[in-house]
Amino acid sequence: MSDKMDKSELDIINGDEPITKAKSDEELKTKSDRGTWSKHVEFILSLVGYTVGIGSVWRFPTTCMRNGGGAFLIPYLFFLVLCGGPLYYMEICLGQFTGKSAIGAFELCKIFRGLGIVMVAMSFVVLFYDGILMAWILYFIYQSFSSPIAWSTCGNWWNTPLCTQFGYTPNGSLNGTGFATNITVFSTSTLQTTPDSQNTSVIIRKDVYSSAANEFWLNNVLRRSSSLEDFGSIQTHLALSLLTSWVLICICMIKGVHSIGKVVYVTAIVPYFLLTVILIRALTLDGSIDGIELYLKPKFSTLLEFQVWLDAAIQVFYSLGPCWGGVITMASYNKFHQRNISATIIVVFMAGFTSLYGGLVVFAMIGFMAKEANLPLLTVAGAPGPGLVFVVYPEAVSRMPLPQLWGVLFFFMLITVFLDSMFGMAETVVGALIDSFPHVLRRWKMYIVVGVNVVFFVSGLPFTTNGGIYLFQLFDWYSSSIGLLFGSAVEVIILGWIYGFNRFSSDIKLMTGKDSSIFLRTMICILTPIAVTVCFIMRMTSYGEPDYGDGYKYKPYAIAIGNFLAFIPIIPLIISMIRQCSSTSGSCSMRLKSLFSPTQKWVPNDWKTRKEYTIICDQKPSFLNRVKSNLIGTHETPLI
Image (cartoon, rainbow, N blue to C red; front, side):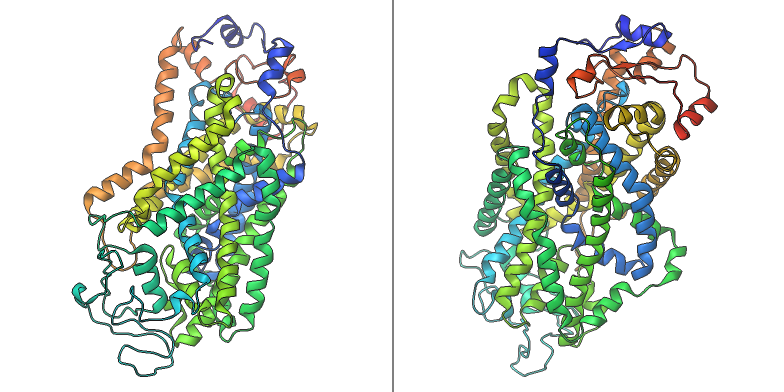
């Protein structure tokens, strides 16, 4: 179909007649045949699994502690309920109405039809580097079966002469803490080397302890080099773990929604059981209550700081996952008349609950570890980035009875949490490819899934090198937040004002039989756009540089690459907008109206409904009438 304005588009601009999207029954049936969830509960579990990711164990606890403890829950819940929830519901309805993945869901506004590419690009970039996280987790599970547990002792090939473990110091004396302080910088020539003679030296700064768990993480798991410039070589153990990760994800996706729908019964439920088991055990350990108190103790004065509210808003987008494309993609497999208010409430509640609950588990263990080590809680809890998961918790596990059991349980829990998010984003990429060429690729979906997983495995190999952790930190710092907030702001403005929430509410009513509440209208049209736009502007103006946490500074060229990564997802949208503008003809006013109107591909996924579906636009709606219809609702936009 040509993108140039045809007669039907001119008709809608001039207000002469509606666009009627009626085609042959056979063609409509073919386009709607994408498969659906076997049961609605599978869709809900998939959303829960996709939404609840490793950030609940990694990002949220430290963000909460850094921003006032229990007081941080006030802005977090505010943005979760009033911004994240409504936008989440809109994405579910958008995917269900169109029956398409994110890349084809934004035909409701011609000039912004490329917004779906932004979402797919963000998922692609995250999958590019996030697979290494699962590789690390799998390697820890493998090492958890060793006796004694691998990260609990010194004297191994990966340890330095200054390695410390519980009850042991480098000079052989007992100190009862397991930590060495005031360590001086030592020569890298004094370090032992790996079996394949690779230099895995780690410079340890003064006043930084070197525990056995920390050295296991740096010198065994990462085998970290001294900088990003010292890239080193691919580490076989991580490459094999990465391969295993993508094989598991591929198996989960191989049959599309049918296989994913069965896997989520395990991956979405088991984490809560394991978290509960670990929390009960942690509460029996000395010092755990101190950690929970640090985590939850409110500091209400922090609520006067704008940065706290900004961090809360950004954390909501990390916790819920709107604008990544996964929610739209999974909702596209829903039955057309499925109601989703209850599903949205369940998922939003579980996202908030899991973040809080996961923090309880982590900080209970941090309290125990700090007590055992006789160190301040903030010293232990301040581990940056993945260090919280891969240093702090393993250290605590090594001090528990049956450390192998607790190590396997904890890291298996991380696997179940991580799998859902990974194959949710991977399904977004696969769905985008297939929906771009449905007649050609749909029959080959199994091979597309395998091919995509192979691509992500190969692209993840640079992160398995000695310098891979620096590359990971660079990607993780820059790759998502700018595009995430920008995409969310554009999305909510399109739904609320360009297409118009009154019209979108009518589409929702066509699917579910229920009109949208004034509360939802107010959120989508007023509060959510303002909140997301302000957060985007603040993020742009206050974006710092990445810090690995041990004093390492990235060079200017790396910062430049990182900034380029931040804007990569936005580039396709700009290109798409230019293309739409250049391919639309007519007078200036006609072109503007066409560019901000739906395309002929904006049709409901139900083929029977689609035959009679029409869009009728007000010829010249006043600003006040548009505000009134969006916030209160009118009957001026009939659909069938």
